[in-house]
Length: 188
Figure 1: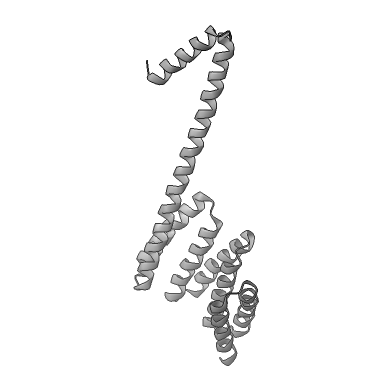
Figure 2 (figure 1 turned 45 degrees about the horizontal axis):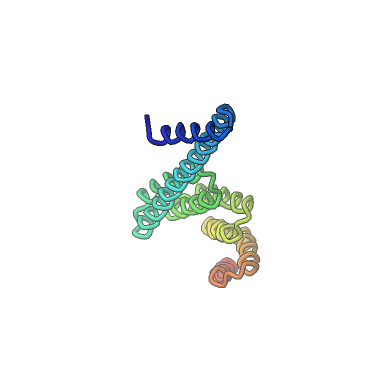
């Protein structure tokens, strides 16, 4: 017999001796065990979620490292793995960020149409979850991609939408970058 079970039996005997019925005591013990089990399962689930989040964030970081040294296939592999984990976690913010990063790779590889698809997915998620910073970045990337495709009026439209948001959220660096993109779109 385990020590906790022995302790429970001793507690039961003490309570019976002081006048409580054994049925009441057993009912209380059963309820206590049920709540302890629920707490344990909840805590285990939270630990599992935290570990998945850590893994996804690690894959995101590794992908960035590969991207920075132009190892695009390796970066793409890491980001696709991270994307699967962020989706499993139902993390819209992580998913939107990864989709934008995957779009960057496709732009660097010259597949601008594919890049647009990823940026548009990122934009939709950012809007859905109210992530204004990612929304502005997605709009900027969509604008940059339209510029690469030679559609300067559409590029300008997306850059102007991004500019409004960067100003609204006080992102001075993003505002400066977007103003540079607008200038570039107007001069081409």
